Image 1 (cartoon, helix red, strand yellow):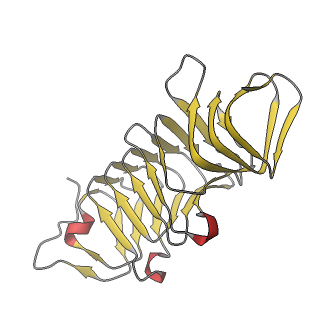
Image 2 (tube, rainbow, N blue to C red):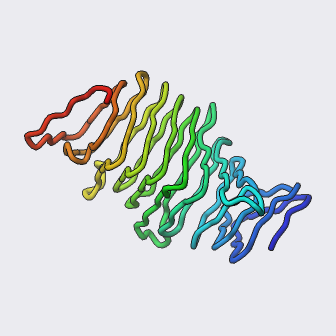
Image 3 (cartoon, one colour):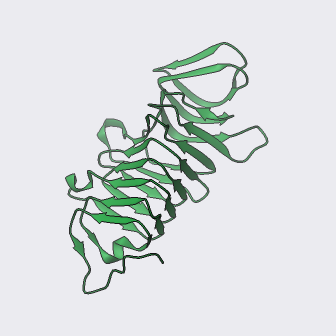
Length: 238
């Protein structure tokens, strides 16, 4: 166990492995370090820093809590995942009024990876840009994403939504860059809600079955080829 009760712990390119990390009154600077199989007690706030996750992370708000919070709201906060990971029991806070926060899937040695927002995880964004990207990676949402007043920019090889995505007032969800990868895909088996002043922009080829259930009161924009397969797409609120 490593407990920071005062002063500064600077994770500058180093690796903290198989540990419990507690911030109890001190400061932690994340400068390209790695948390390898770490349990973090408290709110994991990157404050504009960058940290890589390897072999899972557990975040609890306190020693007695069963859930935790990761705060990426400070501009340029970057949370990187170096292998296949599932985020669960975590509330992820993203976006800032004048900046960008990042959730990146960057496999070691260029390997394609899969990043899953688990069924007990959530994302909340109220401003700014939240960038989810990772070259040839797959991003899966099994949880709940509540987004408003900003931009969700997703650039991955494959996107799967099996959970709930709510695009609130003023939110734009961009599925850009997908068509640059020959195996790129968009697959919605969950629910996507688009509020009256929100936009879902899908920049890849998609079929009617892949679109799935979209409750649209705003703007649904498809820049690729839409294959209805003889079916009917009713673009209106459910």
